[in-house]
Every structure is written in structure tokens, then in C-alpha cells.
Image (cartoon, rainbow, N blue to C red; front, top):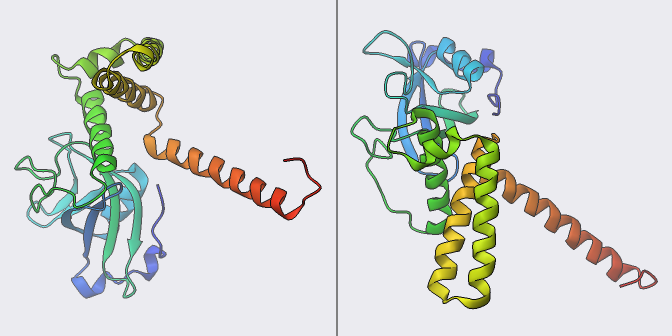
Length: 225
């Protein structure tokens, strides 16, 4: 989680009678999820808890998003705009953001691009929700209840099935087994408190090192290739 880009004393709470509009954006898909209002106290609570806490004008009190539904918003970053009177929050939702059951308070909208990557983010959200709520009919909840060792065993089994399918099965079976492997890998990451974004960052760092090494070899012809 990132702290606010401005010192709280620099924010202009007076302009809005003690409240700042706070736009919440999905950290992975960039979809706009909702608009709320924050007082200094609710902003401090959001930073302390790691979850979005608004000031409810109707309830006249601090209100943590999802405090009754469980559909909280996990804070990733909080930034102030150039006038220091509006906040932009990136967050990961643990369930539908809207009380009507839609992903956003502005309705469900299909992503225009990067659909496959955005679906993986949505799948991570669903896995997190199942881990939090633990519904009786959820395979994910039962899998997580078995512990990390059991999840790791399933990842190993699914990886073997992918390898076997790749050698002698049709493409549709390879895809099905690969989907099973990816799902169980996401569950394992969540069980360890990790996520797919961190895996991507590890790959990006590895690629960066590899690219730099190749550039160094190109600049120094005496180095072995």
C-alpha cells in the first residue's frame, strides 16, 4: 500500500466543508468503481487499516466499505490531485463494489482490451472472496481449508497433467489442463499472501536483467557468448 502523495496537512479539506471527493479505481483493470467522500479521519483510517474508509454523509460517521457485506476495498495507492482537494484511490475489491451486486457503482462494463489479463484479475478477486467468506458449496474454500500443503499438492498434480496432455492429447485437453493449473496456482499464491502482479514483476525484473546482460555482451566482444 502507498501513502498519500501529499502530507495530510497539505490537503484542502476546507473547500469541501471538511470532505474530499474520493474516486476509487480498480488497481488492475483501471475501471472506475465508485465515488465517495473522505474526511481527514476517514483518510487516516484508510491508511491505517489498508481498506477504504469513507465518511458517510447519510450516517454521519466513518464507514468502512464492505463492513456489512464483506465486500471491502483493499487500498493499493492514494493520490491527491494538483489542487489537493480530490483523491484518487486504486484498490482491489473483495466482491462487487455496488450494493446492487455489480462490479462498479456505474454498472458492469465489458473491458475494451486486455480482456484475458483483466479476467485473471477478476478471478483473483473471486478467489479472495471465497477465502474470506468461505461458502459451504465453494471448492476454493474447501481447498484452502486443507492448508497450503494440500494446495501445493494440487498444483503439482495439475502440472503433471498438463505435461502428459501436451505429449499426447488434443489441444482442447491441453488448454483445459492448463486452465486447471493456472487456477490452482492462483489459489496457492493467495494462500501465501501473494498475487499474480508480483509474479509479473518477478518476470519483468528477470527480463530486464537478461536484456542488460545481452547488451553488455554486445558491447564487449571479448566476453563469451
